[in-house]
Image (cartoon, rainbow, N blue to C red; front, side, top):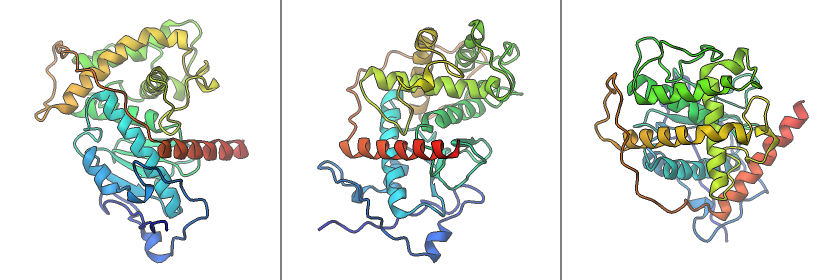
Length: 320
């Protein structure tokens, strides 16, 4: 007999101003849908605990929107947890929440037609109910940009390492700091050295360029170890990455060493118990981290990611 699932609720009522704190679930009975998640021998979806995930990855907490059923909350939580496993492997650190600064909301803080969005003021990543799958890496890229820019490699004008919403069509020459800011500047400026790139407006904002390229880097790393996580990022063979507002594989290749250096340095700082603002001088790169095995992605999590991504694609097509 299958274990009855407990109701998933917000991990904290105060993780963000205006959080819904599960008010809907308190006044309505959340019914279990017929579409159950397949159990797995290693980890039962009934045993997943949002409080343990928050503690393990040093997150501020989780928020769940009013209109997410209990099964949808489990689905998103399982897929997000698998994404956090990968990010922890990539950064060689479990401090993915940046010392409990970053929170994650599922369908709780909708914003227009956006697939997902990041709120710098509240330090919250929001993934929408119907279209958030595939956007986690992009929004986490924003969170890295702003948190490392605010607290580690600081600047008196630009809170984000990238320079924020300033246009990236020309180098932001006064965005000078230490190694993190220098690496991000090089990454953001690079696309405009390519003749094909003619981004403007929103697509040329430096923070958006960095988030898109970070997302593409995550897709590259997943592909490199022969894994797919369609909740974290779309597959590299998706036409999404074949040009347009993203770089082609050939165009993106020169950025891989820069991203490798950036991720290594960020991971070292995330692991530091006494991380302080970086001095305005070149910061020595850390020694190479010890090699580790690829993260294990459970069959259950893979099935959930595919379901959420398929749901996202289906809704997107209907709204076109």
